[in-house]
Image 1 (cartoon, protein in one colour):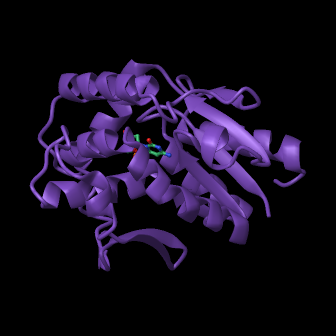
Image 2 (cartoon, rainbow, N blue to C red):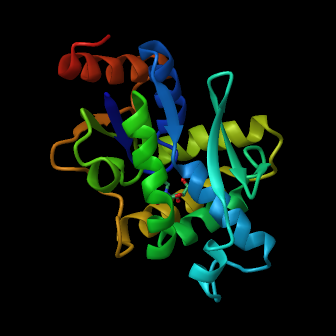
Length: 223
Ligand code: DC
């Protein structure tokens, strides 16, 4: 099986770029952030905030998260319910970042991610795919862009969906999440030594997809 690991900070375009690249390659696209978002939603629904002042393991032992593919699109299920559309709010992003810093949560989600890559050719995006989840991935890419550019892209996406949020709020959110994701003790966001750095600050979406496909093609012979 071929696995393409795509890591990088929030708003670098990982999910859109990975989805399009996977489509072109005929691989499954796995958005691992959605798993952390679903777990975050569980804790929110139980009334906990980002301080997660609770017995995390006990709650996880009564939680099921799984991924199903409907018409080739990933859907995420929390306790049997499709929550794919409820996990995209700024509040859900912050909760996802909080739960993702907890060892119990990372262990809870690890095997599922590895199994998907054992059973399918995948483009998998996240923060620790090349460093922890799939250290033997066929290709590793660290996708990034400047914080200003990432905030602008994310803000336009949210504005299109009608979210009332300012560019400054989105920028501050991104800087804070970058900090959390890069400074947590376990599986922090960082470029794997053998990952190719792809900076898309100056690239259009099409150019970014082409760049990823070029890197993949050079390393696997697929294009
Ligand atoms: O990619 P995203 O914005 O949907 O991710 C949501 C949060 O989950 C993000 O703050 C970091 C975390 N995450 C992680 O720690 N490891 C992953 N493989 C994917 C996401």
